[in-house]
Image 1 (tube, one colour):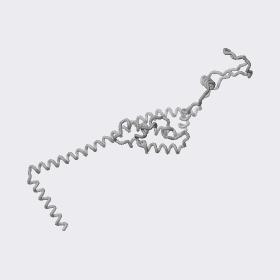
Image 2 (cartoon, helix red, strand yellow):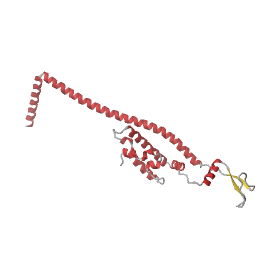
Image 3 (cartoon, helix red, strand yellow):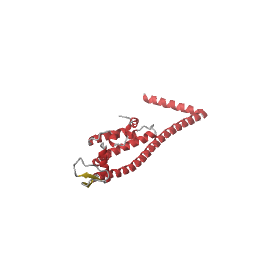
Image 4 (cartoon, one colour):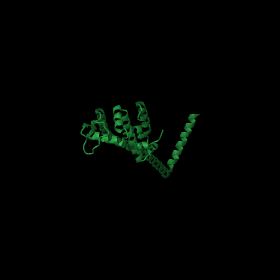
Length: 233
C-alpha cells in the first residue's frame, strides 16, 4: 500500500477528472468504481498522516481525500455520470466544410440549397441563382434531460465546495485538538517527573539536617526485614 507521501508525489493529486482520481476507465462498471473508491479511501485518509507531516502535506492530503469523495459521488450516480461524460467528451475532428456548416447551424443562419443539379451553370459570388430555395438550417438543442443533469451537477458542485470548506475547517480543528491533547500529556508527564525529583530532594535534605531520622529509617527497614524473614520460616 502506498504511503501518503508517495500518493501526493503522484499526478493524481493534480487532476480533477473523476476517472483518473479513482484510477478506473471510462467503461468501468459500478462494482469496479466502488472497489477502487474503498481502496483509495483506505490509502489516503488524512488521519493516517504522521504527526511529523508538514502543513503542505496535510493540506494536500485533505484536498486529495475530498476529491476522491467528489469523484465517487459523480461516478456512482448514473445521471450525473452521463452528464459528466456528455459535458467532457472529446470533440470529433472536423474538416473546414463541416466546421463552417456547424458554425452556421449554431448561429441560426440559412443554407443555400440549389434545386438544379447542373454542374455547368456559372457560379455567382454576390447573388444566388434564380432557381435557389432558402431553407433555414435546423438549430440543434441539447436534450432536456442532459440540461437538467448539467444544472444538477453545477448546483451540486457549488454545494460540495461549501461542504468541502466546512469539512477542511473541522478537520483542522480536530488536528489541533489532537495536538493539544498530545502536548498536554507530555507536559503532565514532565511535571510529574519534576515533582517526584523535587520531593526526593526535599527528603534527602531533611535527612542531611537530621541524621537521626536516617538512623531510625534504617532500623525500621531492618526490623521489617527481620519480621518478614521470621514469618517466612
